[in-house]
Image (cartoon, rainbow, N blue to C red):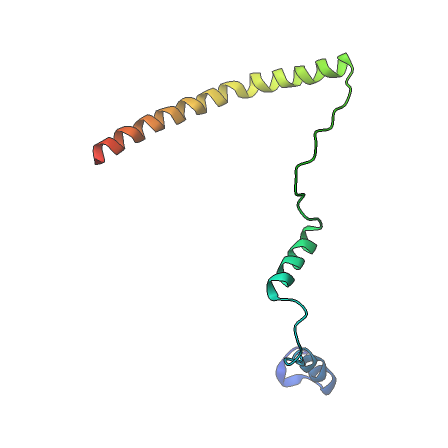
Length: 105
């Protein structure tokens, strides 16, 4: 086995040991928190904007507007009953919780 500690040749052993040759007496250039923050920002690729961007307005033709309004109406027809049902169930659950809390007191 190439990675087994008992079968390392001198070159592999030197390469392995090189990873542990950190100079512990050197003065750190960054605090660990800064290193972690920098690594996180590099992983994300961009930093979060301080303020949200201003809305961007575009001009639509009447046909484009009508198409978008049609899609909105279609979504409301499809999901409207589901949303109403969920709101009813949440309302019932809240009522049950109020009665339960009164029973405990």
